[in-house]
Image (cartoon, rainbow, N blue to C red; front, side, top):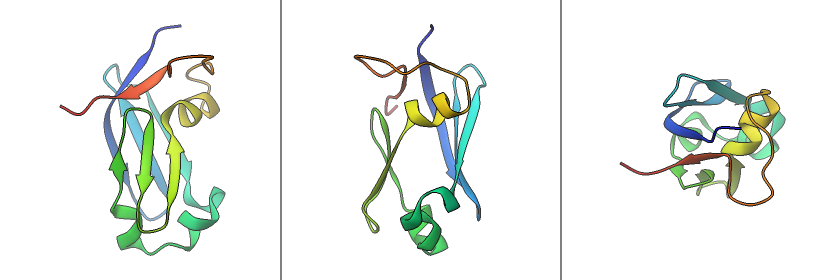
Length: 89
């Protein structure tokens, strides 16, 4: 399966979203993750991106891109290098 490169990540009041360079999009609702569910809107908006996922320093929460896209049925889980990744421009 083709690897997917993340090009955009954003949040709203209900979820975190990611899109790829080829237009695929996946999301996680905040209510799935207690720390994100209970976080303020400002805390949710302050995230950092790494090669493999999203980190919220204020609440010490991490989510992987591969898990997000796997749950959406858009990729398989890898045994080695992540199938979904982000490279800082």
